Image 1: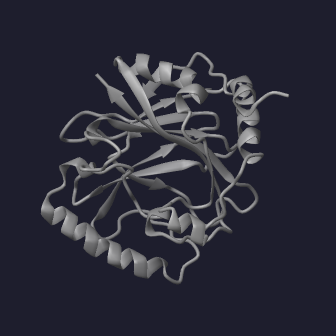
Image 2: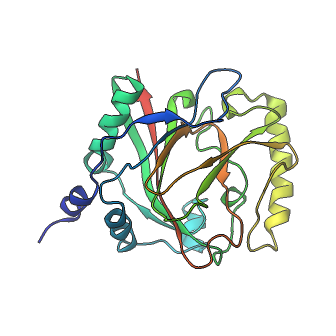
Length: 254
């Protein structure tokens, strides 16, 4: 009988992918960091989704997830610690694309949610960043990136990108920006207190919509994880099917 890693190696096979800058995606005024997309990424996208769905899914909004500090909506399949073994083909592609000495994977997980799942944390719906300056996860957040592979046959899988106080990256926040952010969080918590789902279509308080990335089926986007972003999803978009993606974070080392 084949072990889990062997089964995964059989289904997680990459095509000869090419990255291109997403048309219309913004660039930071501090440093040009485009959002990239690669299409037709996986050779067996349906089998990859099936592999995750047959794994152990966390429950949505339960005490266990909150106790563990998770802010993800829906259900998750975490790949654990052996990321270099599971994702070596992708790591090699990213290393060549960014032309760096090393790409260090930080975390990879499958994410699944639909319109029937309740929110339980403001980060589930509002814009957020995945790394902060001073975060124990990485000494230099400017080297942190994220990828998101769409495993859902739908044209409604999107990621929204925002600015807060006209700053698209948390790496350029001042003390005043952090104070404004804390005040905004208080308002956000009140909004979702009695709501099953919240969709921020455009602007809200200090947030401004900058760009919405359409992620086609079996496509992958790359973006700095210190950019403000969220899953751009209306409440009635996924009533008959789940929104399933494969998401990961990594650090590039020059």
